[in-house]
Amino acid sequence: MKLRPPQDIHEAAVEQHYPRKPSGEVENDATIASLATAVRTTRLNSESLAAYADTLAKDRLMSPDAARLKLRDNALKLAETTAKKLDEAKARVQQEVAEIRARTSTPPAPRDQLSAGLEAEIRARLASMPEKARDEVVGKAFVEMDVSIISAVLRGPAMLAGMSQIRQDMVRHRYRTTFHPEDEARLKRLTAALEATERSGRAFISYIETATTGSATQIAEAAANAKAAEAAIAAAIAQQE
Image (cartoon, helix red, strand yellow):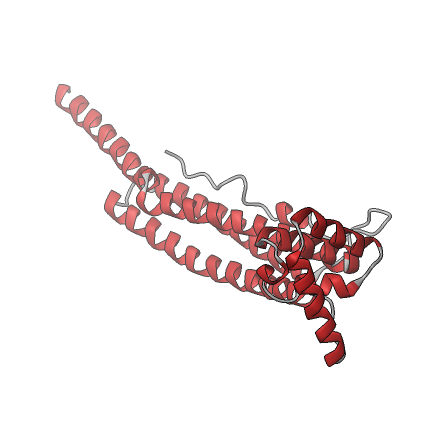
């Protein structure tokens, strides 16, 4: 069986998430570029391993055991360097994603004790309302851009406002989209680029497992068997002569 690099490992899957100008022109983004570079390295290393496996398959002088060991060692070395590149790039993006989420998760903190007290009163009032009435109040707050009500919902555990965690998360997403649209757009791009990178990483791990434990390690053995067959035929012909 021929060792084939996974087709879904390609930097284009990450590069499609670059920001674009209104004209459609792609803008530079160093953070996403770091992911694309890591995935490109992953693709090139995958292709390099496949080429190495082909070289082993054509080497008639190497024993099957030696070929399997060489393929395994090469695969593990590539896996180590590739994983390091991917992890470094992912860590950079994960940090920025966390920073954006933290910065845009709630409105600014109350300016003084009076504002904090009012926010607590609003939260208590919301918690006492039926769900439908509370949803109407919160929806109206977004229409009127009433940050005090939105703050009361988002600052603190969901239960304090009488909400489920899912409902509070929906309000938080609406807050981020409404008050921080550029951050929300960037968060979507970074998250999508990160997911594409992680898919490439999983495909690469599966590929390495195939190279080190699967049928790919039998490539050289098949070549050796072919050589043995040729030798047997040659011996048989010699005997007949």
